[in-house]
Image (tube, each protein chain N blue to C red):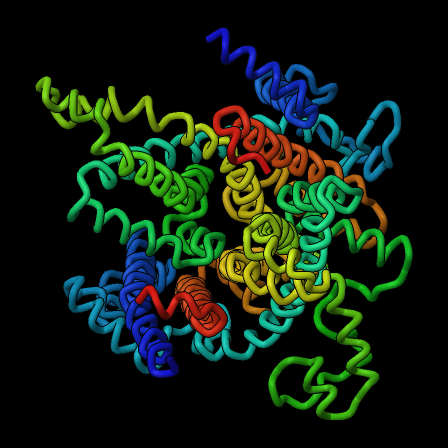
Length: 281
Length: 341
């Protein structure tokens, strides 16, 4: 543990960018948890007398076409955006780990079936597949979560499969098997902890993609409905005003989205350095 | 050698068959997994029991799943993807008329990305830790984090509203221009064939912003991979030998290093294309581009299922074809692949 902390401090000191991404991560978490209390205005309260006002001290991000405070809406939206992607990523993490570990550990028909499934999903352009699934399941927020989980599933299943496959003949697995552990127990208590580090890296690299994907779906009008504050839909609503020069409607939620994705991507790179220094680029 | 690579290409074509089958099965499941009863949906709100049953029979929904799948396959073989409810036209025709617009944009974006990413990656790899290397890293990090629709709107704000350099983001041509005669469907090529430079310039200036948006998005993974591959190759033994033998910098870089580094870049190109086909949908919405992406969005909002599923199928098949093309290119470029098989 101590060595870990030392290594962590080393990586942080070595790479200020990772440190910056940690700060950004905590900021995002804080906004996600306490957003509604931090926001200075009610994100849904309209005030038509003050519509489409550029940024001022009272409204740091300006107001939208209904006079709603863009700053408050961007802050409140953090929770929904993060919730959708965290839920989706957790689902694909759980399903992908279980499927991938089984495929790598048992091999044979199980492996063939699961590999065929991941290959088929990956044969689609993923965002396009997401559009198809949402149209089939119905246009709701839950279905956005399921869809994002499905298209991210192959990434986890592939990593878990590769990790489990390289360990199925390892000494500690043999030993566990010889001392009478069942397959389930071996997978859960012996394989599981060992494949965790690369899976954690995968999660944080994948989070950014999940956020982008979910926001992209709501940008084209799927899932989240107005007037709910959400970054993708706010950019879509603000897009109409870009050509007449009211940039703050779309640019601020877009920038928030970009920062969130950037944060998770940098965090992923940093975590990878922490866990596997050979992978540094 | 020649026969070997032909054999490999044939085998690769066979390997694509199960993937295509998988795609067809998935799109079939998507068409049948509609929420509620599709027959009720197609019949409309005023339908009674009898007309719903009739529609169910006419759609073939009263048959068993394997039978329905067989019918679906037969229809596909005839190029029948069903009718779009919003326009009343066969989906395949709707897609075919809009496809050139999307392809022209995607290829232009890909071209821009390759034209910038590969030199940038090579420059960064040959001068590690220089200014250009840091620039490359910055571009890569920011590029993957930028939502395409945000980049697009940002470019519109800067180049249309502030600087007034580009035309309004409203499709492939302004209202004052008339589309060139249809030959390829690519306005840039068709206008040149017609010898109309005015239209060529107009469609080019309409395309430059959406294509740059796609380019910025596709640039990051390509530049990253070029840099990593070049770094790996440049530190290898055969490059050292080539240098020690006194070959010129140029020969070492282009003949020895680059030709070997191009292979992983080619693989990345396939993956990038998958992202581009998705990003294309978003960019088309931002720039009111009349491609299949805009068509799919309208269909999605109008719950026009046949159109959406046709779109998904068409995109997936296109992606498979592209991957095939890349693999075949790979076999041609890399002589080692023939030896493994």
